[in-house]
Image (cartoon, rainbow, N blue to C red; front, side, top):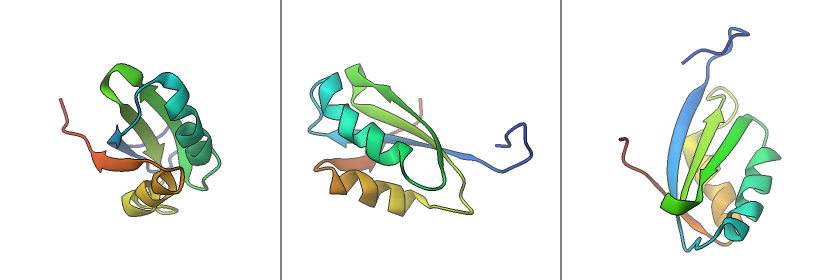
Length: 81
């Protein structure tokens, strides 16, 4: 995937274990939005999903999962649909 500015970007779909409402996802989103290399963060509360667009040259999927773990939740890769 490539952004309009020519930088590479990857998308990561993660299921957040234990998030039962939109309020639960607020600290996860905020932590990710403050993380260097993360470009955008979206959430689907009904499916407990976080969608992260990130620069793989700056941060990797494992580090993104660690950031989420620090908020008190577990993240696992979600199946693509």
